[in-house]
Image (cartoon, rainbow, N blue to C red):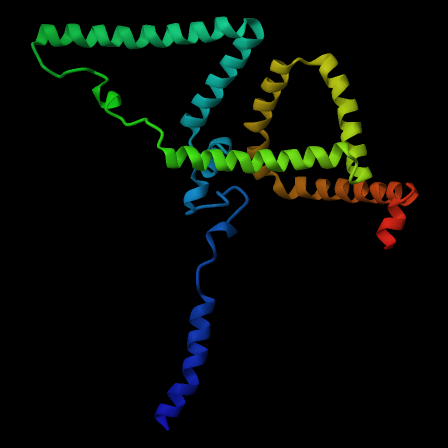
Length: 235
């Protein structure tokens, strides 16, 4: 009888223990990396942590450097900016190399080249890595080509009209801003919007849901009035 009682109790114990299993890595908070533990998503997690300011020093350095470069491109030509950046980097490395050589000569030490640790780093790109990057790029290119063909050959009339309206609005944006200015605005948005959304997610989702519902109702009304769309949906 004791064995029978233990056997009847074991399923409930196993079910309760299985219910206490930890959740999947991807089911975290909105601010957490959506692909933690996945080898193929290491770079995406790094970008995610960067734009969410997980490491303030690292994000500040990347944000400040790219912003200075874009502001320089807005004031000077690309050739001038690239030349000045290379000159600045060479001044720093050459000065440090000469400084370490003088220190070694005075102290009569044999520390060797100050950048030896970086010179010994293997930065060659293997054929496997090259082909993996190439295959990933080809997948995105093929997807983009299919989307372009679908939009320009009007597979879906509503989607093509959306593209036309968007391009029409972009003509006004292009009349006010140039490419560099748009890149500067894009960087400011990339490094500010995610962290703001993380802090005020509930309020933003509420208003976005209202706007999405209104947009959906307007699109449905337009589709109902367009010839051929209603008939296609009915079929």
